[in-house]
Length: 144
Ligand code: HEC
Image (cartoon, rainbow, N blue to C red; front, side):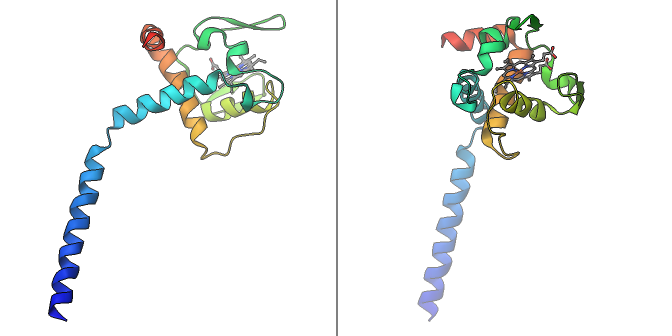
């Protein structure tokens, strides 16, 4: 009985140390970079919608250049993360950045809305925010 207890305690100690080691390996900067890379891929991904369009069809060159929708000129992303929530004209109401992302998925791209906890929303937001804040760095990253 005593031996079993000692063994149990030893196991607890080992598993505790292991999980601590795992936690230490997570690098938040690396995680964010991964989200950015996934977001960048998603931005070019036509499978989010149903009409053959990707985000990039309207937000030209990854959102770094002005795009077109019919006669409408779509400005490149600028200070995007900072300015939300805003009154979003196209939808006619106040929205967060996540909601605008989903609006573009469901309306111009005729896709299914992404669930609020869908990682793809965060990934797209990570990408869009980065393009806004560090345009030149975004270009450098494309070359990597
Ligand atoms: C058919 C064209 C079209 C597609 C495809 C499209 N959008 Fe948009 N998007 C627009 C238009 C038009 C606006 C509004 C521009 C304005 O109000 O000046 C907009 C606005 C936005 C904004 C707000 C920009 C700002 O400056 O506040 C974000 C963010 C955005 N779109 C993300 C996306 C994402 C992410 C995708 C892909 C999932 C996407 N869009 C696909 C047309 C499109």
